[in-house]
Length: 195
Image (cartoon, rainbow, N blue to C red; front, side, top):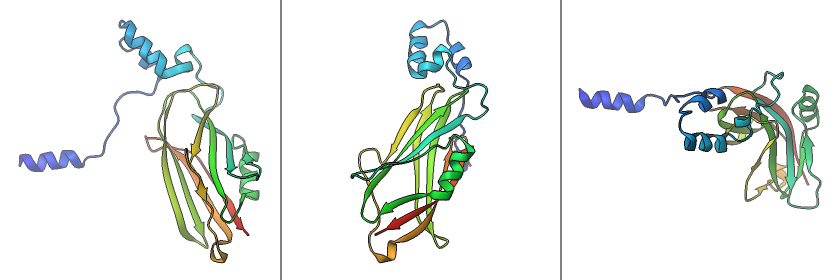
């Protein structure tokens, strides 16, 4: 019977303990100066009271979605912090030449409290069939007014497909989900691969 209990315990989903509230974290163990210095270093600007725009209820604000090319092609930039910016991306989409090398650069702000285990999920479909899927853990971030920047791929480039079979229009779906399973932003846009 003990082995069944141990197996059941291992199969239970991990439930994170603790809080994402910066003030609560700073108040814990406040009698230990070295621990307070360590927490201030980890929390950065949030430890000094910078929690972002408190009048904006969003915890995550993606300010910019940028496609960067490893060539002379100009970057394609979309501002996703407004409805108009998301509509512009949905209408125009991104265009890549077959065989080109590119990457995504995301600029975002975290507001109010710590955002744990942020993930960027990207799905690519063509004619209703899924062709690619990526799920990347971006990390955990403390709130601050200035933007965080994340590049995908960090040290390499993505390769656009080549050949007549791969040219055409795809539909990409992106979303940002935190470690607690909350979706903070979701959007779709066309991806055109041309000769």
